[in-house]
Image 1 (cartoon, rainbow, N blue to C red):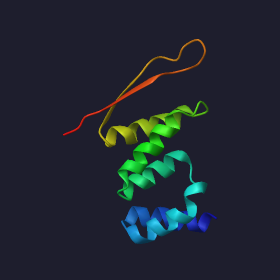
Image 2: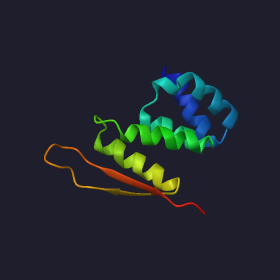
Image 3: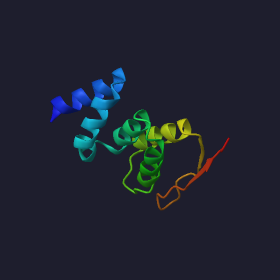
Length: 101
């Protein structure tokens, strides 16, 4: 419900990790993919955020605004992303590289 969503995002924003983690467990299936990835990142679960973002990039129904958000999140996690222009079939290919320290 909207009240729990509001509490979840308020907890994330304020840095209340315990409350945010508890609410995430309840709400994760209801969150949009970009919200789920960003929440995981903010909760310090970067490996999960990375896997979720990469999984979402495979979704052929992914809209352009969501793609942009996911790219920004991946870049924040250390990725360099190169995308090919969409072909006549409408497919786009993404090459993602990670720089390890």
